Length: 484
Image (cartoon, rainbow, N blue to C red; front, side, top):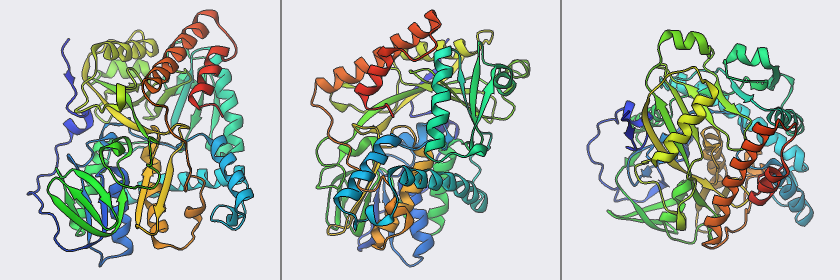
């Protein structure tokens, strides 16, 4: 069966871009220049305009708004924090010891308390995003149906129980999650062999292309200039050099995520090889008939994940498709980029197989396959940086948990640029140094080996009926820097 492969994403193909005439580069100095027309950049422009109606603001985008991960993701406006919570907590405790009067130390919170504040801010961000969409009339097919992680093995269920304990430590309350037995899990979504699950009601499903394109439409009407098909090459104090000429700015935000390596400059948080692009691939089925949905359930439009090491993420779309993603072919040698998102056939087959493992009685055809690049740091933790001398800010490293985090990052960047401490500027991702990635070919071999280890571990747990996570998987998690 043939299917559309690439062309950025199903979401973007289903949501035609707004027709606007080519935008000339501004000749006068801007108050704020934002490099990257994804969610971080657009939210930054939105909140800058709310706070400063008189500012000259320009967004520079190499392709079109939402071309990168912002238009290709799984559409989870989720409660998931963008990083390893234990590493964030450890970094805060080190910073308090080294500089008690510094931005982190002066907040008066220890590591765990700081991460709890981070989690609370993410909860608030979900509320605020939904409020903005409603207020601005942006229909992104948003439904707050929650997030359901399903365990199909005993070891997977044990991991969900461990996750509950960690969530409680780091800021989830009793109303923020619910452990489900097999019957309760299938009452949400009738996943084959489900033995239990974890339900988080705070998450909302969205169509990411509708969100970014709706947000771009709003800020254009508010007077923000968006220069698409304008590729930044070098960023320095006061100037962004592009393929169409220079753009001058008092303050510059760099919001390139997995594409951070496409620009040069002395940029905070991007020195050396701190961020690499890791691919995530997705498929979307044709719309399913009513009898299929009657068998599956999924009436609440929950976001669906699982407890496997090679995890999936999925949603039931507004037009009754299943969109499902995973990590097949996760990395290209020397940090290659995914282009327009064409997916290798074997990865499409892998994702099709994962969908079949969830719903083996389901007949479906793949309508579209695509992939995108996540920005990933060595410890899988996001970071927010601002250099007051150059007046350059950087947000990077969401590692696949960026739909909510981009909103919080934008507001944090603006607070950092303003120069006065706020609750957001003391959150633990501020100035979080993640270390450097190994050189090639060690980097390529390490990432490929990590995913191979997780694949083998999943199969071992499934076939043996193991009650706990395998030692092999625990080794893989520690090797990757994922273990909390």
